[in-house]
Image 1 (cartoon, rainbow, N blue to C red):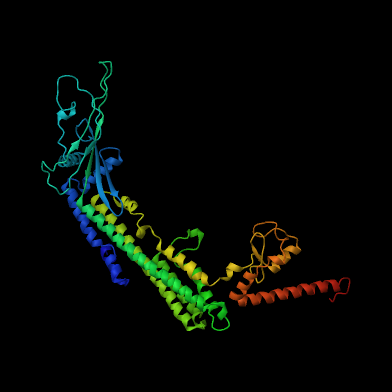
Image 2 (cartoon, helix red, strand yellow):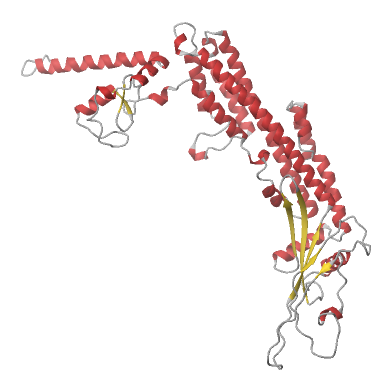
Length: 487
């Protein structure tokens, strides 16, 4: 299936809004513009074969230089085809060219206001022959002002040629041999109307896509913030004894983070953005997993079920925006490739660099949305992994903050002090033996008891059991020293 058909079918099958489809890349219309560019180039004697021959000869260091460029800014620009021709004292065009290419260029130069070269042009300034030895010319580059490509070449519309030449300084010795002739450089700027239409239309469509993308991102980010506020209300620690859904939501967000739906969390994968198909598969696995664990059934508040549905719908909307962005980027790449294939102007890389700052092509929508989701939604419920003691890997029920700002549970710190280990396990600073009761972080302690009540109670019981065991061992060791041992 040709891309034009598959592109249209994809736009229709994904159920994109009508305004999105209207703003999508108009692939078929741009193809028609390419055909007009082909005809316009052919009328100037620059068909695909001729242009390819020019490119080959240019790569080999022979023949004229052909350059396609964009003059201006994204908002106002003019594509230009510039041809630079080297001639020896007004003689024939570079003899390294093939006969067909040379004739095409000579015909083009005549259309642009240059007369066909004659033998008289090879002699001194003015073209006359006086019987004396002609002076060696050092011509300056010739600038040719252009006329529109579709204009008729009449005498009043013919391009003006401004050239200047100066006599080279002669040697004091009249018998000195003349210096070798220097090449004359003629620069021809060829403005094409059809290519201007093509790139102006393409740029306008990119601008429309940018507006669509910005509105969608704003809507999604607003929904993220609203869901975050609602989840905060449903999981507030003050409501823990009544109808708090703190633990189900914490598990849902933990699984969501581990799934890395839109971005890889692995350094080995360089935190790359997921493809749309991969993201869709991961999102489906996430929904299946939380349902299999029965997390929605653990909600005490009916509002939490509504919020979960909104959370999943919001992720579906992110995926839809990313799909729309992806297929339009493919369309841009395909149409530029087709333009180069049909015209041999090699504009793909040039135009891509020119519009690289366009928000639609340069922005990382998934990264921006994921950042908003991480900072405004997923962090409203603290995760246990962020508050574990680095030594015992358990919650720091009584957190002690050392002078180096690292936090440990009180039991681990007491053990370090008993062993006279003054080095911080994290930064190796000599701060452990200086810690006392004033280092207890009461604010963090109250926070952990509020957001991790179950873990805090379990850790408290574990600490109490450990204290009792230590006391029993001390008594047992002290009471049995030198006594009998039951075998």
